[in-house]
Image 1 (cartoon, one colour):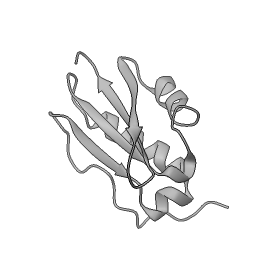
Image 2 (cartoon, helix red, strand yellow):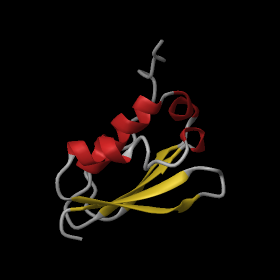
Image 3 (cartoon, one colour):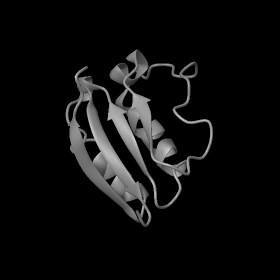
Image 4 (tube, helix red, strand yellow):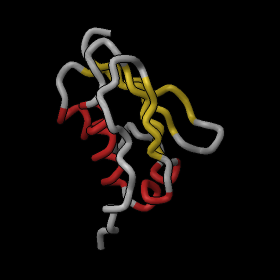
Length: 101
């Protein structure tokens, strides 16, 4: 059963030409790993080359290297993934370097 995420606010509304963070820690993210993956891809697409985006993922899914990174590496060329740390709230931060940063 897939949860209806039609009411979930997008993580990005514009292109980012500087480094920024995408909050993927909401209740809908905790309940739906595919939403985390989809919105992570959206965040990377909205980040210009030479910048990075910090993907702050919900702790419910564990470390992102196991479920998120393979999806991102398969989708994008020219990115570099870096595990930053665990947040005080229990989430995980992946820094995605886009292009020539």
